[in-house]
Amino acid sequence: MMYGLAAGGLLFLFMGGEMLVRGSVALADRVGVSALLIGLTVVAFGTSAPELAVCLEAALAGNPDIAVGNVVGSNIANILLILGVGAMISPIRCAPIVVFRDAAAMVISSVTLVALGMTGIIVPWEGGLMFAALVAFIGYRYWTEKYRRAPSGTLHVQQAEAFEDIPLKLWVSLLFVVGGVGAVIGGADMLLEGAVSIARAAGLSEAVIGLTLVAVGTSLPELATAIVAAIRRHPEVAIGNVLGSNIFNIMGVLGITAMVTPVPISAQIIEFDLWVMLAVAAASIPVLMTGWRVDRIEATVFLTLYAAYVSALFFGLPERLAAAV
Image (cartoon, rainbow, N blue to C red; front, side):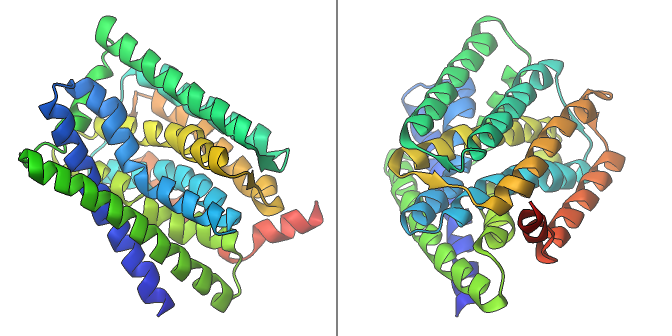
């Protein structure tokens, strides 16, 4: 039953996220929003809708380890797993401005979360500042890409175009949005109930389940986008999608969740997983700068490191480190 709930939740999250993004993109296009702005906002927000739904549901239900683990685990998986899979299909190129601006912003976001994690809790006013910083960053990106003709603007246009292959009538678009929101909320509830039951039955902490099963499940939209982009020979879209998602996960998902309810952070995540997330974010910059691409050798290293990280979680390394500290 618990595995069925978790699997059903993942399915609803994936389907709901797809419906929400496609419906929202179609609606935005109908009201004359540019493809660039759609890629920067609608697609970014939509692909992170599963993370937001799960975090809010978990935090309000008294399962903050799943909420925080979801964000931290998703950010680790986005780089090591999703970029790894995408680059294995087709090497991923990136523009220098993506590294100097978006990857740097991702590292700054990660440092912010580590600093807040040291206090043991993210309170509402901190969440408000995080979300305000995200809105300001999106505004800055839009200005540089529209008015200064930054080359990364084409990435966000391609991100929007990836969801425009099925033209939708207005009423169908609205149906997709409403149905997507309902599926995401329902999927989050199912996944949370199933994940908590699995953790208790297997003797695993909720943090481990949040960092692995829940994190990978809520990252399925990003994984699907990376695979489709690679197959369509636009693998560079995966870079913009992953970096943007990681920034939004911290500043947007956790920011909004903390605005609704304070989010405590467990000792295990503080002592181990936050630092892994920061290390992965920081290490991605020199990797991207070597030839401005992620090739298959680097992708193999990414996937190997992700397997090692998940193994460490299931063998209880973080708990032992937290206990020792």
